[in-house]
Image 1 (spheres, protein in one colour):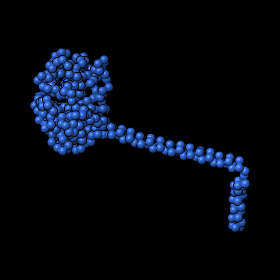
Image 2 (cartoon, protein in one colour; image 1 turned 135 degrees about the horizontal axis):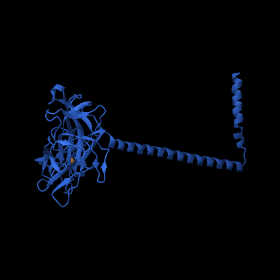
Image 3 (cartoon, protein in one colour; image 1 turned 180 degrees about the horizontal axis):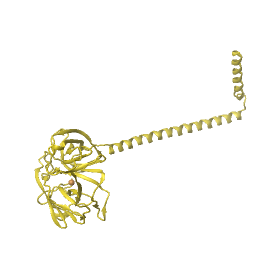
Image 4 (cartoon, helix red, strand yellow; image 1 turned 45 degrees about the vertical axis):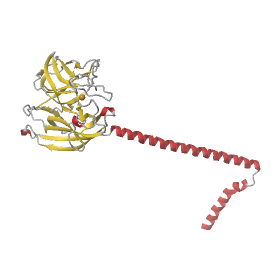
Length: 394
Ligand SMILES: [Cu+2]
């Protein structure tokens, strides 16, 4: 049976082959036609293989481009800063509330030498781990250290241009003037510091039951700009120190930060080309809130002497810049050995804020007395004038 089947299959195969065997008997025309058909088939096959190769190569090219683009995107948008270290320190205020003090180090921040972008680099981080959640922050301070240790100061040719902390979960209580209209929608900036490294002592040395409430759903982002006057790139670490009470004591008030800025919506203002002694006024802000001003912090650039805050044209707070540190680093450029702002005073007696009052900030600059920061062409860098009023709303 098996033999018959086998033979049967063999027979069928033989029948299938008959046309091919018969082909040997075909005339020349048929042969030529077959050759032409075969050539056509080979041509089509070649074309097919060519197209297939083109598709494969195109696919590989698209894949390579996609990898390059996504790597670039990742590099650009990845978290360039990491928390390098969290150190617990001894708290200073309100011991009855079991406060905590932590110092967080963010980095590394590599800043190019002065020949590139004038040695300035901005580091932005959208989602920064806050020091705590559901906590009352009573004290904040920023600092800058070298990656390998030691404070980074102007005398090393490396310093903190500024750092700003923003609460992305809260809209700012005050809009900003963009040149045409009051613009809403900015998020609440609750801390800023330049090389003056002013302490935001909201609890006023433990005498005022005041802080900044950082809720469970609040969200912190950071923008840090560093300055490097050295020829070589330098790598630094931003340190932020916070003291906080890990809950809301019933008798504590949370402050609302009000950001007053000579630049309106844009903090940087060009230096007037025709004067070295000048004042720059902020747009007037008509208060929309009632409350008491707990404390005011200020920020100026080198060349600035003082900030004055005005309520209905009357000065209610003066913040003075203190100059000290000289640039004594090794590789300084000629004309760069200038002194820098090392501290700024604060105001704890600015009084109250009432709906309808007109508020304005003035930055007073004297570039004859204090040399401003210069760019690579020897021209003054843009200046700033900022006050943050911490207001306890009624
Ligand atoms: Cu600044």
